[in-house]
Each structure stands twice: as structure tokens, then as C-alpha cells.
Amino acid sequence: MDIDDLLAEVAVDSTPQETRDLQELTRCWVAERVAPEILPWPKDLMDSVLERIQRQIELVEDQTGNMEPKTNFKLIIIQTELERFKFLVRSFLRARIKKIDAHPLHIKTQHAASLDTLYPLLSSTEHQYLTSHQSLLSSHYSSSFLGQFPASLQRLDDTTGGISMVDKPEEDKAVFVRALRDVGEVFVEGTDRKFEIKRGDVWVVRWSAIRQWAVGTGTGDVELI
Picture 1: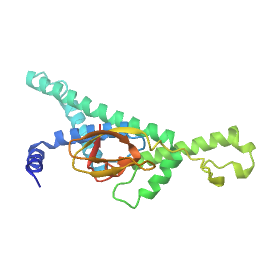
Picture 2 (picture 1 turned 60 degrees about the vertical axis):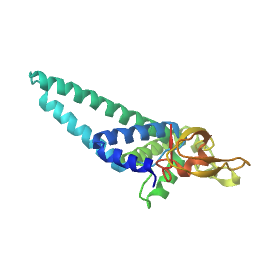
Picture 3 (picture 1 turned 90 degrees about the vertical axis):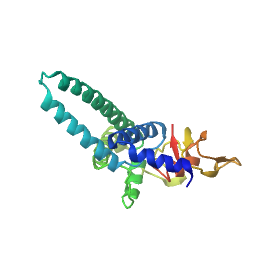
Picture 4 (picture 1 turned 45 degrees about the vertical axis):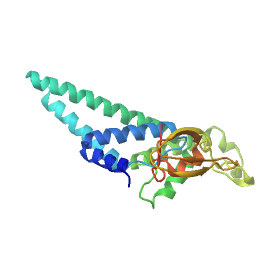
């Protein structure tokens, strides 16, 4: 461990939990908007953030109507901070719902495979939304046109003939990443391209090549920017 790591640890310990939550929420928000595929649900972070939002809402409701200048000024600060958290949460959830709507069958399969891990892909509410959305979509397709096809052609997740009917995100999409730690050599699959990523480097690279080191999906050695 070098001096930079020691200084980073001291800085984290001296940072208020609320500030750390905001920084982590911002990082998750950026990553979710940039990554081509949905990232694992940050349960601990979201539980903490949603609980803090609820407490602040209750405080504002209790203190509203107090004519004391100091209290009013404090409420303005709390409401401003509250709106910042609410904006990030709403935008973060919209980015995830957009991906669920675009690739429901693919995400459903991925979520089922992630249930035995420490970080399931979806929250319980998101999974409920995915299930309801896919059920309505399947019913609509069936009544509109699929019901007129032979039974063998009615499946939305058919993979016969070596062609999958399940839409997947573009895993080779280019993303901007910043190295938080030394990663070492990275190989781009399907090419003879390889490069070395060191701490502090910023790269534009295929998502499929960097996914295993990205914050939220792998070791957390790199973050999306």
C-alpha cells in the first residue's frame, strides 16, 4: 500500500456518510447511464439513500410553518439537498427501466442467474415490473398477430436454427473509463489489440473488454465516466 492509498483511506474515514452516499449514488447514476447493459442493483446504497430521503421529507413536513428565520433557512438547505438526491434516484431508475423495456427477456434470464450471488441484478420492485411488463407484452403480441402463427413460431425467446429471438444490449459499445487502480494488460476479444491500464488513466474501450473490472460488475478497478 503506497502513500496515495493511505491518504485515500483517511479521506474516506473523515467524509460524512451522507456525502459518501451522494458520491456513490452519483457514480452509480453515471455508470448506469453509460453502460450498455443493466448493472447489479446497489441494494445497500439505495436502502440508505431512500431511508435518508424519507427522513428529510418527514423533517420538512414537521418544520414547515415555523416562522423562525434560522429554521426557515435550514429548511431551504435541506430541501435543496433533498431535491438533489431525488433527481439522482429518479434518473437512475429511469435509466434502468429503459433497459428493462428494451431487453426484458435477456434481463429476466440474467436476473435469474444472479439470484444465488451477493448482488442480484434487479430489485424486487424492478423484477415485479419486468414480470408484469413482459406478461402484458406477450398477451398483446399473442392477440395481435402471434396467435395466427403455428405454435412452433409463437415463442418470443426461440433460439432454434442458431438464431436467438432474444434482443441483447450492444456489448461492444465504446465507453469512457477511468482507472482507480492498476489493472494490467487488457485484451480486446476478436482483435489483436491489447493495452495496459494504470491508475489514473482514462480510456475509450469496448464495454465487453472492460466489464470484468468495472465498478458494480467486477472488481471495481475502473469506473465509467
